[in-house]
Image 1: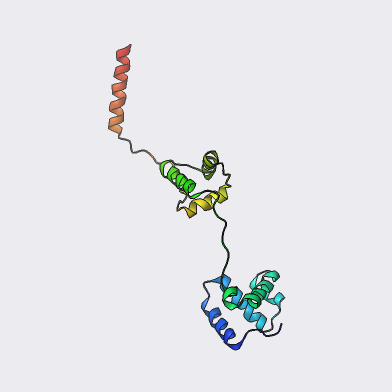
Image 2: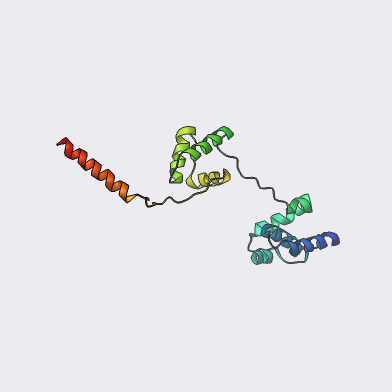
Length: 164
């Protein structure tokens, strides 16, 4: 592929490449543009960076069509929630008051109250966005007072004997 980056753009990308070690997605985009500009094949870049061949071509075409700043930004937006803001508030209030031991129980509650069917995986993602986290329930041994239990038992046995 023929060189398509200007000298200043290339220098800017090289500097950005060195400083993006903590952002893999940006690093890959920058490296694809630099690699193609240097004459590396799309196939070799795809193999070296462990990305699809179509991604290599996509990064190049977005750069050609929309420019550098657009091609290096991320435009993904996740889908919106299936529940309204009011329903989300009601769900949060329910979870603050009642303890559910499985996400499936919460899925059932959401379906019964709002008619919206969530998968457990989808509901877990929603709960994380709402600030909830899962804590596995476990048995906690009671801290019983032995003397009080013995007193109660003796008192109950005396009452039972008194009824005979």
